[in-house]
Image 1 (cartoon, one colour):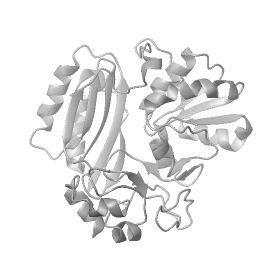
Image 2: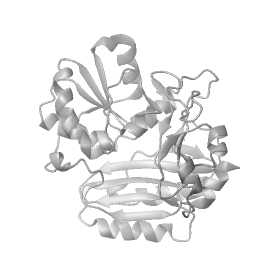
Image 3: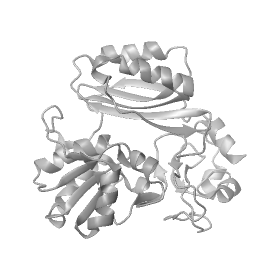
Length: 311
């Protein structure tokens, strides 16, 4: 868990048939009016996928209001701390899908699909400790995410977008026969759809999904079989749950080469490249990935947030 801050970030999802997602969108917008709640909330006929930030009081109110919506009364909310609200504004939108797996998986209907069995963080820990030679952990995230942190000995793929993953699963399928296969991602929303797709293309045997995702695992085991930091989709970008001085870092600063797992975005809004940079190098390079970006006088994206990081 992060050091305690003044703000709370919650992340949650649920696959459930929603007859009128537009009505729920308007309801959420209405109860968020006049508050400091910010974040991204996606709704669709297949459910909800959301993350939001605010003060402790605001998030308590937000969660209470979400649970008043009948379809969401049993949602599992995950929480983490932040020193400021890591979202620039609130976006509540209706989409065709709450997670897009791409054209290869366009026929997956989550209301009828058979996802994998959910396992707890404790069960995954037991798999590692008691039967690792028969364990396969598949990372369902993008390359820039697992670059700074991942489960030990997990299978990763060089994808830049989740919709590219179905094609990779066909390559993996024959490698994992007869093994305990555990799909993992940040919160679980991607894995739930991905495991349904995996079963549809012939993955057989013991197929599991880590319940609550990497975040829930790291809350319980911050210094065990997950190495590095967790990539998050807000202005914090990366979160180190293991606070020990000798924690394992699996990546290096792209400028000085020293061990570092702090992911940042280039200060130049037109570039916005993701880069791993230590605080010293980030400041020395004025928050930019290269000399060209420092010279371009392009309006800075969410300027005040980057200025804070450069202080």
